[in-house]
Each structure stands twice: as C-alpha cells, then as structure tokens.
Image (cartoon, rainbow, N blue to C red; front, side, top):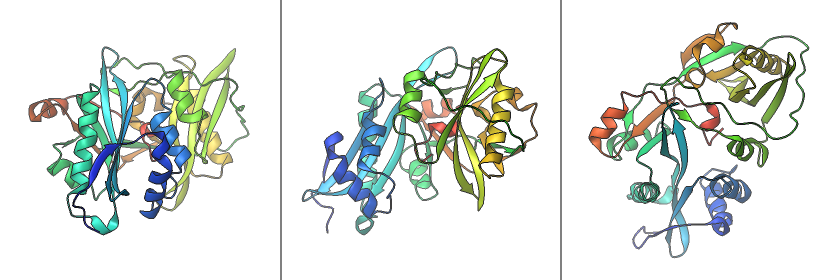
Length: 307
C-alpha cells in the first residue's frame, strides 16, 4: 500500500471501534474502544485530539494528545501532552509519523496550548528531539520504598475521590481536582489499579492509588496518586502503601520523587535511582523552549496514559 493520498482528519467517539482494531493490529491490544472513548472523550472539562490518517478509507496511522492544566502554585498553564503516535508497520519511514504528529500539535495550539510535555520511548525520542523541536528535561528520579510487613488493612474507598491539594513550591505539576480523579480512577479503572482509604486519627488520613506491575522482572506496586486529607497525613499514606505492597506480594513501592515534597519520605527507608524516563518539553519557539528548561516540571506516575 502507498501512503500517497493519505487523508488526515480528527476523529470522534464513534470512530474508536476502527481505531481500536488498527491499534491491535500494531500490537496495542489493551486499547479497547471503550478505553479510548473514556480516555480521550470522557475527560471532565479538558480536551484532547485523536488524529488519524487514512488511505482508501483504511487507517494507516494515528497521533493523540491530551490537554492538562499544570500549576506551580502561583499560575496555571494549559499544557498539551502528546501520547500516542503510531504508524502502520508496512508504511513506516514514509513521513506519516511527522505529518500526523504536526496535525495533532496544531490542534493543541488552536485550543490555547503553548507548552508541551511528553514522555517518549527509545524509538521516538530522537524524532521528538531532532524533528519536532523538543528539548530534554532532567530524567525524573525514582524513589524505591520497600514493602512493609504488617496487618494494617485500609478500607475500600467510600464516596468520590477528592482532588489533590496544590503544592505551592514554584514547580510545575498537573492540577487534579475531584472530577479529574473520578475520571482517572473511578469511571474506567485499570484492571491492576486499586485505591486505599487510609484511616487516621480522628477520621480519614487520605487515599492512595497504586498499580501492580513488574519492573526488571520483580513484582512491584507503582504509586499513581496520593491524596492526603491534611498536610500531616502523608506518613500514614506512605506506610499504608508499603503495607499494601506486602499484602499484594510485591517487593516495593515505586514513586516518582518530584511528585511530592522531599520531606514526605523522611520517615520511610528508601533508595533513589534514575527512572530512565525520557521527559521532554517544547514551548512556542526555540527561545521559549530554552527558557522552559530553567523551570521544573514534575510528573507523577498517574499522569501517564500507559499506566
């Protein structure tokens, strides 16, 4: 098949069945039509783009982005986050990847995005850096907290998940209100996700959402998001996460360090290591991109679509 005559267009919820079939053909079996509709079109007060390229009516490539508000505690920015750029294996190397990505970025800019953040795999990182104008941010650090034996059994959550309080330290993090948390973890939870309601003195200490997975061949729990009920509740939440890792027969809890204030880890043993994630940024132009390298942008595991 030739890529000549490819038609590029935005898609809607009704197109997700076809898109899911295309993704499965390219080895992305976990992306069901229901999941795609939820992730891209069920978002509360936020926006996304799903761009596809078709030849003779058949999907041959796709590019997706989501928009999120990031805050540093002083101001907010609408940030475009490219997530999936995928080309039919038989047509790679013919410029489809770049054409679809640029159409998705243009749609983001039309919605008011002037800043872009993404985590890329090894194959696409050189393209984002060399062709799309991105620059490399410092690699996020990973905190490894050992599982904690014990019998503490947090309750299953009752009622909606609350939003995460804004951390006012001048560093950029994704803003997550109660609607965001419901969309992310309640309406279409991943099969390996679980949320703990952690009791505390005089009430609830907060909620912790984790995911079971394997890293380097070992079973671990990845801390996706953490919602303290009060500023002093975080030791109880981290301890509950470590107990949960033990109950689920995993060896450790993994946390992206910058997601939370460093002092939160003072009362738990932990090791720091590189996450190995390719964390990239892009601004309005080359000068703006260089200026963004002077600011700190911190992801949490819960910000990432592949988790």
